[in-house]
Image 1 (cartoon, rainbow, N blue to C red):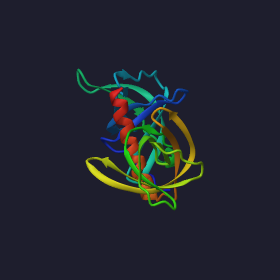
Image 2: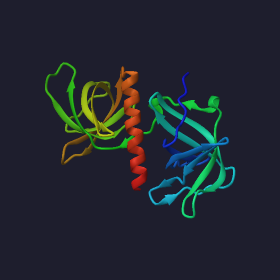
Image 3: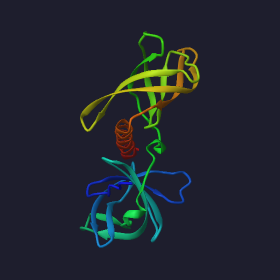
Image 4: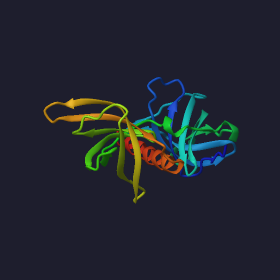
Length: 217
């Protein structure tokens, strides 16, 4: 398995190993030296992540070849300048960096316009994503979709000011009426036969959106 190591300027999310709430904090790698990694103090919105000496954290990052995670120990604070401090964490051995199954990435709330077709039906329907992951989406639409029904989905994502057209199939896992007055349904979809390139494109896009949302909290 090819592991692509983290690098300077790498955006990461940080969680405590024993945090059952799985709260994610945003940070950036600023330096790698003498078996240590210096990172910005991780924040979730205006809230910093406060760690104790040798507390264990999980670090996740996304590269060109996929998504990776490793566990590190908090080693203290490095005072770069009078006003700039970094967290010091232990650098992992290469064999301790694990590639994450891309479908394990969390769904992130976002609204994207979606056009879809039902199999055997040439009518174009419109909906909106409620959330999105590399493995599926929750779709809001006016149609009551049936479990196991397969849809042809079309939508675009904007990643680093580059627009990518997405075309794939989604199978309905569940569908429920959310608003009777508006006749609005939410359907949970899982993606079918997704290519590796498309899966990695989506997980990278979702990861960036997750970090953006953590910044704004």
